[in-house]
Image (tube, rainbow, N blue to C red):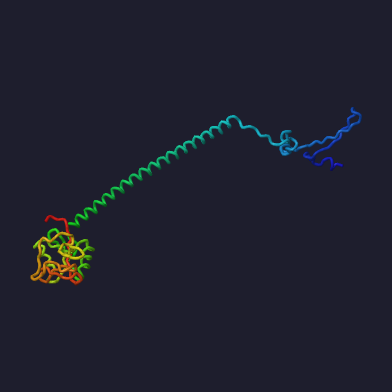
Length: 265
């Protein structure tokens, strides 16, 4: 009996008790009372203190007016920033287009200047080249002369001269005759004297003419040579003595080319 009386009480246990009310005619009421050891236990047991609103679910509250104004200010700042970025992009695009147009204009001007300089250089190069003889040629007054080192027919010899931008030599003075005679060096060499045909189908006649169509002004025939051509196959070459002699065009001889140059004669 004493053990039960002096046992340590447990205050956190729930106690149920019955109370009989006499006034209502013998009705019995049962209630459950919770006894806590401390205030902390009361806070831990939050189930008994929930408000009716918490049972229905969490309630969403509107933010205070100050917070709404902050949101509006931030949105306005972002809008202004986006607008400024768009304006900046437009300005950069316009400047890029203008820069490309200016760059293209400068390129076109430089290209035109380059073409003009290149043309002037080419003209100057031609002018300088026209005053001097190519390598392997000899200059006399206003012409350059080339002596071959092989034998060819008259037609082949003229083709070679044309490939060198020249033609077979045309002798128009005694000084030029003496110069080319020395170049011939005691060898027979073709010159640019050819035959011009005259007449009809019944009767022909022939005369001498230079390859450029100009007539003879002076002649330097060797002794005993016929001055008139025998036929259309006739051509003229420098003999070993340097004088002119008639030969058929398919004979093989050396040849002398002549190229005009710009100079003060």
